[in-house]
Image (cartoon, rainbow, N blue to C red):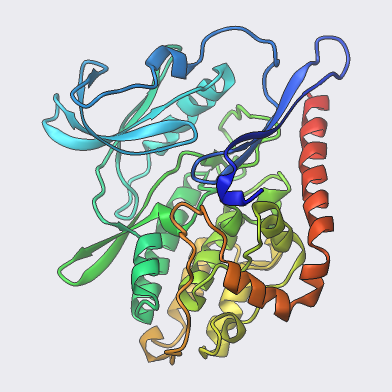
Length: 400
């Protein structure tokens, strides 16, 4: 079945592991094509969810929480909606994100980590004004960012000026470094979550959607972890190998994801594009990316730039730049990117990177021709990834 037609739970099974150990294992495909493997909660548990309490229908003109007047719907994803709203107390327009369908442990983690998110103060991260979660509701009131998603800009104006690419990537790295210093790993770095704002001819970015961010307690050791077992979140084109395998992630996972974005901006396509999310995930685990010249169909880049990007895409976190600060220092040592040659024959990809609703068939086919082993092993890779996901879920349940 075509990937673009799949949405919702595609694997959902009750698993019995002894007395009172019944759990529902679900592999969920969100509308924006993030994937989530969840094993939390008893499958027959009763009770209402945040979605039930708050209501899925929030109309324009509604006054939420006796403070926020809804002006319009900006977007919605698998577990919530984002509205343009007016803060009647502060007399300014904001973005209001409401979260739905959260169980008790998710609410507890959201509340704890929301308090940390409010400490982020960086010019490239939207300011969080108010974050609250209780048994009745969960929401985030934040700075309203008006710009163009990098995914849209890349699709409409590829190839971007190389100096623009450098500026965008550098600012994104600085934003992530700030979050990492606070112990926060973003886990969903992708072009759709990087908003480009042009001001007097200069570009600046805002890194948005920390909705699946997770605390890295090696950086924040005094924090108390409230964990969800068996969670796998992210967008397949940009997920690190350790994220795909549901291993512990730290700041180096974001380094990998930003490397995927950097690679895409220069070549026109993410480093790994399969015919399905499972194939793409398998490529992240098992394949080496094409060099920049091959991937861009002829553009040339300096060896130092190529080496830096490929280091970001190393399978082992230990072989990547240890931090975003280390990456920025290496980037600053490169020659001016505006001096780098590029090819006028590089093709603009046809996929929509903002929503990840389609796979790039032509470029995927060319990659398979360059990697003949990929085409012959696709089925086995599908099965291996599915089995791996289920094994991780079952192992997480047994460890409870």
